[in-house]
Image (cartoon, rainbow, N blue to C red; front, side):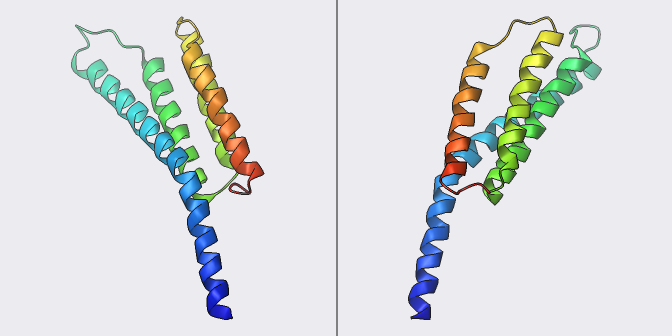
Length: 130
């Protein structure tokens, strides 16, 4: 009897982990790309100061955005509800940072952020995030 219960528990854990996996991978990839972009801009800002003009605020925004996405990915993996808040904060950093740099609002990021937030809230409803 205990063996069956253990097997059922293992199946539940595996099923829950498999549901969160795509979200975790997407957040991690986007986070890594954003951090790499920020680090590359930082390098270019120092190496080619005479040729390329890069705003230090842009570097800080890219790295912060990527770090929040990576944190959200880790919290999604752990099944923590703080993943929703960190992802929302990442979208907010991206939008507000873009406005501070004089760029227009990237509606694609906003729409995809809303869709992704809805998916994270659905994971919370399903009991995947607690």
